[in-house]
Each structure stands twice: as C-alpha cells, then as structure tokens.
Image (cartoon, rainbow, N blue to C red; front, side, top):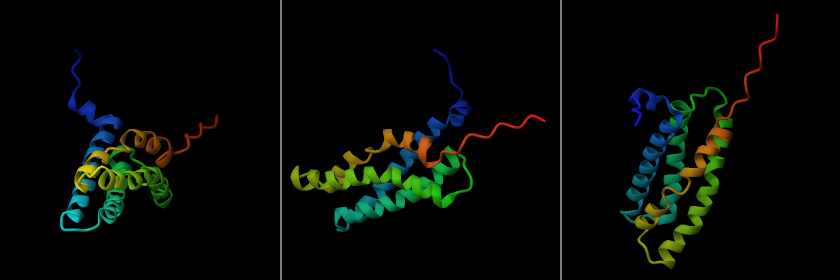
Length: 140
C-alpha cells in the first residue's frame, strides 16, 4: 500500500471539494433544523437553508477548491444554476417524504441532503468556475 502525505491530499482539488461539500451539507442541515425545530414550515426552511448554503459554498468553492478570480456575478449565476435542479428535485421529494411517507421533516431532509453531491463536481468544475484555456504564446 502506498502512503499518501496529508499535504498531497490537501493539494488535491477533489479532496478539497469533498471537504467543502461535507462542511456545506452540514451547514445547510443545521440552518434547516434551526428553522424547522421552532416551527417554521419545512419548505420555507428548505429555501432559506438553500440560499444560505449556496452563498457559503460559492465563497468556499471559489477560493479553496477552484481558486478562481474575477467574474464574481457570472460565476455566482452559473454556480447557483447547478443547484437549481437539485433544489427543484428536493422541493418535489420533500413533501412526498413528509406528507406521503409520514417522515419527520428533519429525517426527510437528512435523507435528501446529499442529493446533489455527485453531480455538483461536474457542474462546478466544468461549468460554474470554468475558464477558457490560456491562449498559447505567440512565437517571437
């Protein structure tokens, strides 16, 4: 078995992506739970948690994972669009689990929390923070 140094792991953008994603999934769930437990409607809590977590994730992915600069609003729009599909699916499935299956809103959202993880790497690396390839230098 080959040993991998911790510094090598930290330099790997996939590892940083997973770490930021795990943190942000937990953050979104805490925001959701903090709203649902006192009695906020679960779909309203979902939307508030979504907005908060997308903004936090955008800053963390942009700086810690992809290390891009410039085009903040364009990147933010592209970033958010990757999550809109997952949000739509979550909004559709959450009531089915809560109302239809009788699960508590916390359990149902816990089951749905990792919904977008696999597709978000492709979406963010190839769309949200994509930069055109550097132009080759002209021969002098």
